[in-house]
Each structure stands twice: as structure tokens, then as C-alpha cells.
Amino acid sequence: MKAEIFSPSGLLSRYIDNYMLVDIDWRNTTDVSKVWRLIPYGKASMLFLWGDKHEYSLDGTTSAMQLTRQAFIVGQLTQPIWLKFTGHTRLIKIQFKSSGMHKFLPVNMEEFRNVPSLDLEAVWGKAVHELLDQLHESLSDTERILRLNQFLEKRLLKQNDAIDYVDHTIKQMKASNGNLSIKGLEHELGISTRQLERLFRTKIGLSPKEMSKIIRLNSAFSSLETEPGMSLTALSYQVGYYDQAHFSREFKGLAGVSPNKLLTESSNELFVTHGQCFVKQKPAPALANTL
Image 1: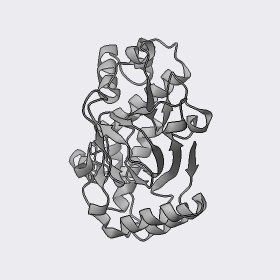
Image 2: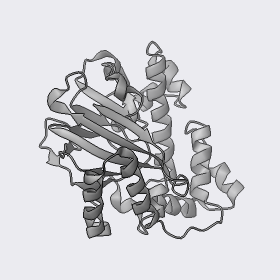
Image 3: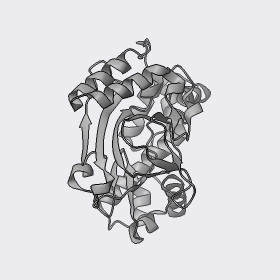
Image 4: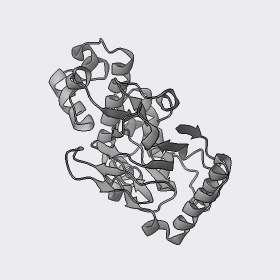
């Protein structure tokens, strides 16, 4: 069982947070749940699988689940997605920065909103299949990362050196845990509400308001993990809500479960947020700090 984080090349590091390489034979694994719930955290990803595919659903594990593609995009999510693993998972996940994927795809990212498995071959053609063959045939993880860097560097679009309003706004949002006055920032940047929203939807697939909410609610997950005894009233205030009912409602919309039930009810699912694990039932050490 393996889950390791690798850094992209220097050229790609402005747009990609990391690569995660996973190799888990579920037939011999009992200490990690086979069902994961992915909580939206404001970033899109790409996955390349040379092992068994997994299943996914936007409606929970009791609904019919579908098989992923062999290589696919997971667009920006505003609701949780459930994943179910079997067989032998071997994959690389590319974790883009919030606006990073748009640097490789000249399309409106809103088209990928809540799309959990968009076929990459439909975007980049047979080169995707060739890369999958190379990943499978590589003799080491280092070689796989080299192949992936080469593949992505060829598809990096020409960049503009002008100030990126979206990246600047997201940086300010994260610094304030999502509690940012967008109006004040618009005045500072000299850009209108309509312009900023259009840029966000095109480059990220979310509105500034949605992005702020995702950052704020993910900070609530962090607090629940580090301070599980904190009252929901205190947590609501800490993350910028003045109404606990409003906080609980938005939390449930993002996570599919209220914060109260998350803490009190048992679950056989692995919760994944910030691209990392949040679980009452702790994963194996190899996974705890990497997923």
C-alpha cells in the first residue's frame, strides 16, 4: 500500500500543487475504508489510472454508481462525491491550484462544474492513451513523474504576465479564511463585480461567493479535526457565521452531512477535504498525511 506526494517541475509549479501517486491492492487492505467521500475544496484535478477503475456517485453509496474513465478530469465541485474502490488501484492524481487547470485548457471551466469524470481523451486525443501506456511501463515512480511533467509542459498555454485578478483574490480569501470583503477588493483592484465574477467562472468554474464559502467551510473541517470538543456555536462564529443554523445548512450542502452528525454518528467512509483525510476512523499511517 502506497500513497506518496511528488512535486511538479519548476515550470509547472505555478499551476500545480502536487502529484499524488497511489498504489493500493484493496484485496489485501483492511485498515482503510474502501468508500471515500470527497468534500469540495475549490480545486480541480486530473487522474491517470493504469490499475483498476473505481466507482463514483454524486448521490451517495446507496444510489447506482458509475465507473470512472481511465484518464479523466474532476471538475470544480459544489457538492460531495462518493468514491468506491475495489481490485488494485494504481493512479496518479494531478492536484491543480485553484485556477491552474485553465492554464492548460482554453475553455470555460464552468463547463466542468460538478463533473466527476470527464474523459481526457475527448480533450487531448490519443496522446492520453500513449501516456497511460508509458505510466504503466515505467520502471520507477521517478520515471512516471518525468513522463507526466513532459506531457503537461507540452500542453501549457502561453501565459500573460499581467496581474491575475483571480489568483490575487483567492490569495486574499485564503489569508482571511474566506471572510473577505469582495466589494472592498474590487475597489482596490479597479474591477467591477460583474468582471470579477466572469473571470472566476471562466478560470475556476465557481463564483467568488462560492469560492469564499468553500474556503470558509473547509476551515471548519480543520477546526473540527484539531478541536473536536468545540461547540457548534463557537465554530460558527470562528469561521465567520453569526447564525449557527445558517452555518449548519451550508456545511451540510458541502459535506452531505451536518457538523453535528459528522461528530456524533459512526461512519465507514473516509472523508477527504483539502485533498487530505478527515476521519474519526484514522487511516493507515501511509495515507494519513497524503490523501
